[in-house]
Image (cartoon, rainbow, N blue to C red; front, side, top):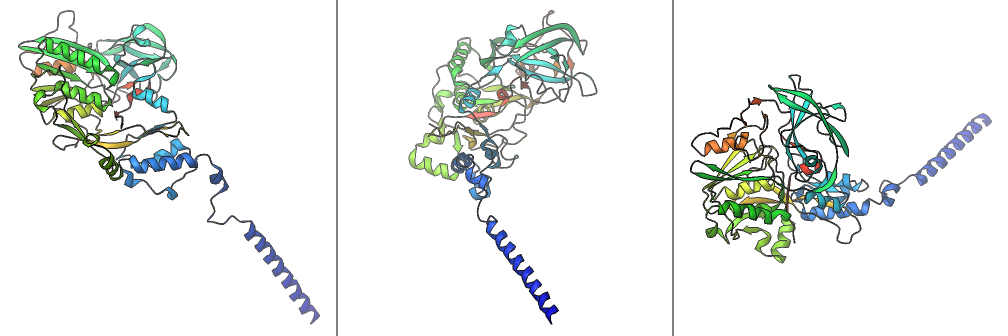
Length: 472
């Protein structure tokens, strides 16, 4: 009996001790409904809540944004922004920068650059080693001052061989030693020359070349333009003024290296080019489509100009054009494609080159008005339709050219040279005979394999595909 009592006493003691530890454990556990301490004190919560709020208000695909409670508001804001975007298939374009000033500089063509746009060619059949062939060199850039020009060939950078693994990043350093080569009898060969160049902050001049070509029965205006920047709008007007004075009756717009820019500048080129311009003044050029929330706000607080862009009078409109030739490639995007779409309802638009990038949507910059944070948000906020309500090029196929050719014929000729591959094709379509080069221009032509359908710059920010406007 005593033995049984002792066993019971021992069991009760163990149960009591277990209950005590269980109670202590329950009291020290963090209840599930309470957020972790790190999120309570995280400095990221406030800016992320702001980002979520403005994205729900302005983002074109705002319905796809998860509710705030389903998002990780502790995340770094520049990472958090991307968690709110629609699928990559839908939105390939929205971005954020930690610095609003930096973002503005990028949109205005100001960046630290060497000043070259490159095409990457495979050197041999292994598809491993690569030569960079300069598609263009920016005016006033360190590259131009070093004597580099379109068609020059880079075979090594900082003593490194260029390969398919490093060619998009090999020009990232501030100072670069470029080992040059020649294209001889269909092969890339070293010529023993090298230049050392240091990047500088530069305002890009997007006017790469403009010229007037006399053709049998024609005066052909040619413009190679790399970015739509409002600071060069008057320069565009002056170029078209020269075209008009010279009696230009055919126009070639070379947008193959143009990733876009300001909407108002693309509207300007539309106004300078469109057929029967005087009859179109005050009539619809294009229309913007926003999300439901922002649409409701604009309908209540703004005028129709927030949605509709109308044709304006531009004295230097060429007036006599029945068609326009546009040279395109994988870099042709956004505001460049907008010009094409704007013009399609009113005149023949002949595309020569490769499929465009496929971006029929645009953005405006969003910043914190209270200046609590310096973030610059560049989310997609609108879609554009032309006067026929068409906007069917916003896929990875973009616009399909009427005449498909690639920028892969070497050696390169200067932009604006009638023997240059793309321009020569446009001139041949205009009729009569193809351009006959002089004896000094004649050289065998070779088709080589490109490593990428898109050209690329030494600063990746110059390769963004933008269609940007100021909502004010």
